[in-house]
Amino acid sequence: MQIVAVQIDTVWQNKPANHEKVRSLLAAQTIQKNALIVLPEMFDTGFSMQLDATAQTAARESEVFLRDIAKQYQAAVIGGVVGPVSAGKGTNEAVAFAPNGSELVRYRKMQPFTLSGEDLKYGAGNAHCLFSWNGLKIAPFVCYDLRFPEIFRPAALDGAELIVVIASWPELRSEHWVRLLQARAIENQAFTVGVNRCGTDPTLSYDGRSTVFDPLGVSLFEADANEQAFAVNIAPAAVHQWRTEFPALQDVRQDFRP
Image (cartoon, rainbow, N blue to C red; front, side, top):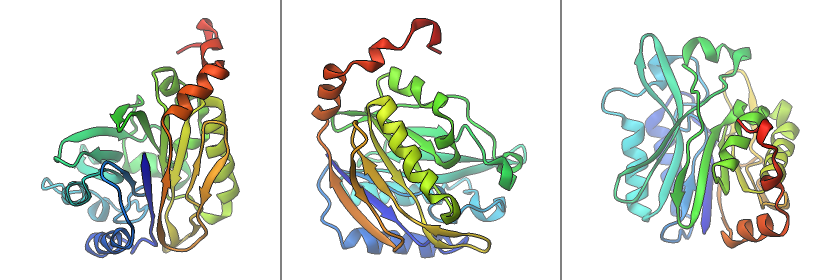
């Protein structure tokens, strides 16, 4: 399966400009039918606490864009959006759509980043989600979730074979980003994809480093700090083979299972 990661220098709180950036970056790629295209957390606004800029209206314009991309490339597309405001809060979500426009998954970030006050603006989710695409069971997560391995293991035990983490992860902690993604791959025996933004926002710098690890934790690609889209092909059979050869997940003690 082909994974296409889009690492953008997000234009702050400007959805039309970011949609155009995504279209331009994808147009430069050769994208296979039934690929999985991955965009970062809050891909079309940046990681902002200003709900009037990030939250979608009832028309769900960010999701309309994702559906259009999925149809154009006959691929699944997953990206970070903010749901309409309800009871004073938005929802920081990873949503995915199939080429026919159907919703494949809607995951709400379980661990809002309290240091930024995200928990005051965005309601937390309470469960992982899985969807199937092109022979793999896929579990999406969002940014700060990555620091909490206990929310990844239940997904793996439910059959997740590909973990996707979308993020706005700042440069000053970028080594944590890469090493934690590698750890999630190793401990869950799963392909793990991390797609981050690059560039700057009003307060932080981002150095990208979007990456793909195989189920043994071997790096298949790591981006630099530049805006780019890149493609990596993975073999779903590699997960099954490794889990059969080294059945660590089967040895998780029943009394430790969630």
